[in-house]
Image 1 (cartoon, rainbow, N blue to C red):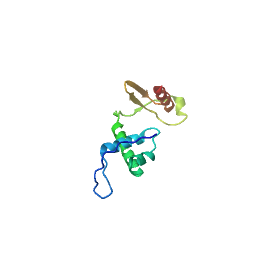
Image 2 (cartoon, one colour):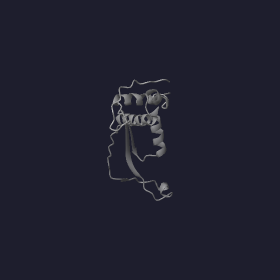
Image 3 (cartoon, helix red, strand yellow):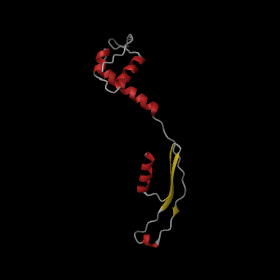
Image 4 (cartoon, rainbow, N blue to C red):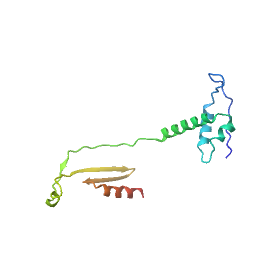
Length: 133
């Protein structure tokens, strides 16, 4: 894939031999390097820059894209005092454990999954797995 990005006139840098390339030029070249099938070794040669410089520009470009698209989802924690559940007599023979009931509520857009009582990990896996399809 031959991609040559037109290069504006390089501005003189603060040190001799180190030009400051235009921000738009760096962004276009980094975007071209992220395209599928683009040769990150060939692009710098075609545009007269150092390959390490393009790798840096590409890394920064990807970080910027990721920062723009990353968002947090709201989480609300409702705390309720633990409740004791009376276990049947045959369950007490297995162990002297008490089970605490609670509520799990998961929201996917307009869909709400709410599990009251004792949540079994396998049952939750099945419910959440069916949400994907």
